[in-house]
Image 1 (tube, one colour):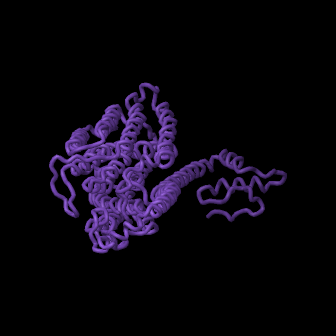
Image 2: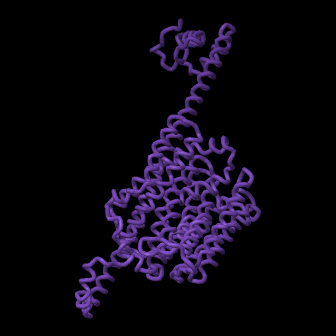
Amino acid sequence: RAPPPDTEHPHVLAPSMVGSNILLAGRRLAAAPGTAPLKPLEEASVAAKSPESFDSVAHLARAVASVLKKIRQAHISSRTAAVEAYDSLGFIVFIIVFLAALGVLLLWFFLRIRGKDRRRIAGQSSLASSSGEQSACAAQSPCAASGDGTDEDSDSSEGHGGILGLLMNKLYILVLLAPLGWASHFAHWGDIPTFLLNLSAMLPLACLIGEATEELSAALRVGPIIGGFINATCGNTVELIIMILLLVHGHVETTKGALLGSILVNNLMVLGTALLFGGLVERRGHLFRPAEGKEQNFTFSSAQMLSQVSLFAAFCLGLPSIFNDNATGNMESTLLFSRAGSSVVLLGYVTFCAFQLGTHMDMMRGDSNEMREPRITFSASLTLMFLATVVVAGTAHCMTMAMTGFIITTGVSNTFVSVILLPLVGNACEHSVAVMMAMRDKLDLAIGISVGSALQISLFAVPLMVIIGWLLNQDMSLDFHSRNGMALMLSALLVTGTLSLGRTNWFHGFMLVGAYTLLAILFYFAPVGPL
């Protein structure tokens, strides 16, 4: 039995059942007259010199080692749990706060644009009223009262059912897959059903964000080019959330593949499909019929500027990929170059926004006749967008946690999943909106959505992921491999050649879709490993 603790000498080691002999020896030495109090290490050394206490010292050493091992294991487990909690909750909060801050900044720009539009419209209406246009409108009032309107009037009046009318779409029934995907993740139904359920839930959520963004653009009364910019910015929310969560969980190569695939799918697949269906189908009233010999025109100046910026973005991303680490020396130098180059690319994005939304806003506005009336209010569209973004964050987290198991179980290459599968789902809303706008002969808006989304990824998302990877101590760089850098440059050249004439037909769209299909086949048979 261990002796009771000594209150007169608190500096003596606390009693324990294993080291009782050491404590007794130390207490006798400390209680001897004329003996100075011993330090704990000195007491242990004195006790260790006696043969009868040698076995106790060995037992004590083993006990201390066992306790330290348990403490270390408990620390590691608690740290792992803390990191997982930080990944799942902290970064979701970070994503929402970051997107909210970005939305406030963009909202400030758009409100300024809306104020300028109102002042200009007020000036034009005052000039029109002074020139005697009021009498001409009065003479045509019977026609207006009879209800005979144009296609634009029917476009602006369709679907005025508020937010419930906006949600009356059969596709949005698939939103119910989101809670099923969450339940599959937390109930451990397996990686394959968890990944597929959450991936399928991304489709209606992306379309819902696209609808809210389109109504936001209509409420702000901006033109088709700037409206496409807004649609591309908010439509890329799904992809940004997926990429950030992939980077948080250490999937650096998958993040690079998702970035590469998003650029390629917007430049080739989304734009190509829009031009293909826009050239094959013509609209007569509310009906779509096959067209013969149809060519579509668009605003040449704005489209030419977008294509030139696409070449600049491909140069910024393709050059480091082609040179790889042979020009910089090693991986550390490549990371330093990528982090420094990301600031240059971000500066290019900021200057492009200033050019598009500030100094040359009229040139980038496009055809103002393509504007329509909103179906829901400005605040309702913002609320709908925020709620859909929160659900997307949780769904993307569950999907990324199950992605590795899905790849291992099914045998599908990581390259195909990241470059083809994830971007196709993430860009579903932009894809559908661009095709519908092209079929309605609103080609400026379709080009602004597709090419503008690719520019958003190239000039904003890619350098942002490099900086976030730097903060997370991940080796995220601008090196996408030489073959992928070549694919980026060739896709930008195809877009530039397509938009260089000021008019398009369905064969231009077929060539872009064919190029993307060829890339998809190549990535399907690509070897497993780094990009």
